[in-house]
Image 1 (cartoon, one colour):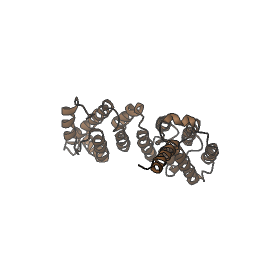
Image 2 (tube, rainbow, N blue to C red; image 1 turned 30 degrees about the vertical axis):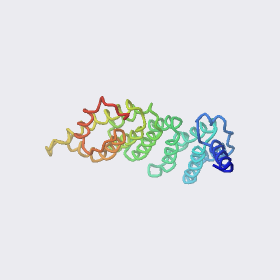
Image 3 (cartoon, rainbow, N blue to C red; image 1 turned 60 degrees about the vertical axis):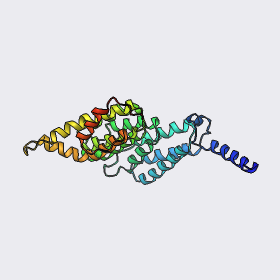
Image 4 (cartoon, rainbow, N blue to C red; image 1 turned 180 degrees about the horizontal axis):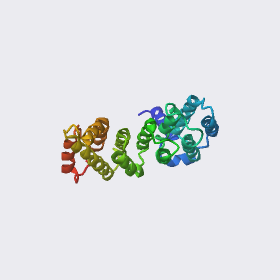
Length: 265
C-alpha cells in the first residue's frame, strides 16, 4: 500500500472517531453544549402552552429537529433536557382533541429513539390520567406502547407483557405484543419470558375461539380479539424465536419442545 493511501486511511479513521453520536456513549460527556437546544426547547414549550393550540404542526417540526440532534450526538445534559422537553408535551398545556394528536404522536416517536431516557416518560404518559380512558384515545396509547418497545428498555418488558395479556382493548394488546418484538437482540432468558407470556394469552383466546356455539359471546369476542392481534403477535414471536408459524397450536408445540433449548445458537 502506498504511503499516500496509508496517510489517507489514517485521516479517515481519525475523522470517524470524531463524528458525533458514534462510539462509546461515554463520549457524550466530551461533547460541548449545543446552544440551539435550549432555544428549540423554549420554542417547543411555547407551542405546547399555546392556549389556542394553533402551532402544533410547527411543534412537530421542532421535535423532528431535536430528534435529529439527538441522533447526531448531544452532550449528556442536553440529551436529558431534550427528553424532559419531550415529556413536557404530555404533561403541560391544554389537552388536545383526540382527533388532533400529532404533537403527542411526534413526541412519542422521538422518545422511542432515546433508549432508557425515553422509556420512563413514555410509560408515564401512558399512565397519565390527563388522557381520558375512552376509545377515542386508544390511538395515542397504541403509539405510546409501540414506541416504548422501540426504546428496548428491558425494565419495561413486564409492563408490556401485562398490557399484552390483560388490556381490555384488543388494539392495545396488539400494540404491546408488537412492541415486544423489539427485544429480539435481548438475552434468551428475556425472549423466553416474553414468548411464554404471549403464548399463555394466545392459548386462552385460541381455546375459547374454537367454541362454535353462536350464543357464546365470549367465543365470538375471542375470535374478534384474535383477528386484531394475530398478525402482530405472530410477527413478534417470529422475531424472538426465528420461527415462522401462523397459528397458536404450531407455536405451542414448538415452544414446548424448545423451552429448555439454547436459543443463543
